[in-house]
Length: 461
Ligand code: AMP
Ligand code: ZN
Image (cartoon, rainbow, N blue to C red):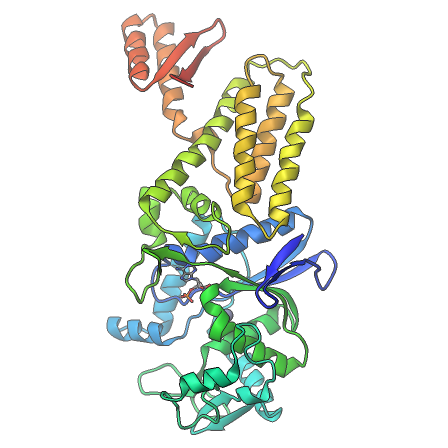
């Protein structure tokens, strides 16, 4: 299995620290509003990667934080005359609803404010080891002390210093130094620390959460590509200075969801919340839309793309629905030698996923499989074979977290109408039976009555 590692800018063979086990950390959202569709991308992408690892037999411990203390949360709390924790808890609840609807598997979700003592311990140790210093109640990390600073983002520290000259904070020793602890300001939440009352800087929370839940060295750390610098660079500097060992073996970053080639973000105002999109399209369409592009490539957000995703997903559902619908009338006779061909699709799916989680390629294979099913499963097929095919398609979809209820999708209306017509015929209400037949015809559905039941198909299918 190959994984693209941002640290080396190469695809590498994936080898976990402990055989068959994976420790995985994904930076979570800052909770001051509903999540937008850009935030949905890391949720869906890394949940899919986790599901694929589990399918391959790995046991994954998956941790994702909630940043529940931050300037934006403070600003919103002030504006609404609420506490920061009221704002954060409200939007954590909403984020968890979105995650559940997007079929994200549950994970360990610590809040930043739940690891304040751990952060204080980490910062204190960095001071003792000479990697951090305090000035007027603020604690800074001294980037000049960490020789690998800039290795992840491939930034040169001298260039960074040159670029930062104008906005120099006079308390800092180097312009690239970053804040670990900031002093209390009136009206803001505060915690007691050896440097007076204050609150932690953002980059420290992930280090402390990783250390507490996963240890000082982990397999995978992930997030959106905007986090490479400074957030992940600063996490490496703190964690490696603290432990003296390599922090993360594989760094994974998802590309952006853009609007008119600009990153979708709250601050730019060019965003759509997951909720807004889900009102128009379903959650499984959102998930499919995200996975239809390789996770490192940008996605251009548009209604047309979502519409296309909806139509594509419908093709899979219709195929599964039709097989399911046919099943009861199929014979039990063993049939044909096409089983091997089905296994080939599974192999090809895995080949794509093994190549840095190429979900776009893997979805392409599902469509090949659907085409195969549409042309090879008919009234003459054996039940066993039809079940084999549909179960394999369902399995591949499930690995991608697509667990739609195909028995209940839009064709359900058709089935209901057919049932009503059968009932009408039973009651010799021929007029109603004809009306229903015509109604279905107007919907593009033709009926064929057989001794056992009524079959239907779409015109031109
Ligand atoms: P934030 O709340 O801004 O820290 O974002 C939470 C997660 O969503 C981080 O992993 C970000 O990198 C990611 N993210 C934010 N905006 C986008 C976007 N437009 N496209 C893809 N990922 C994003
Ligand atoms: Zn983080």
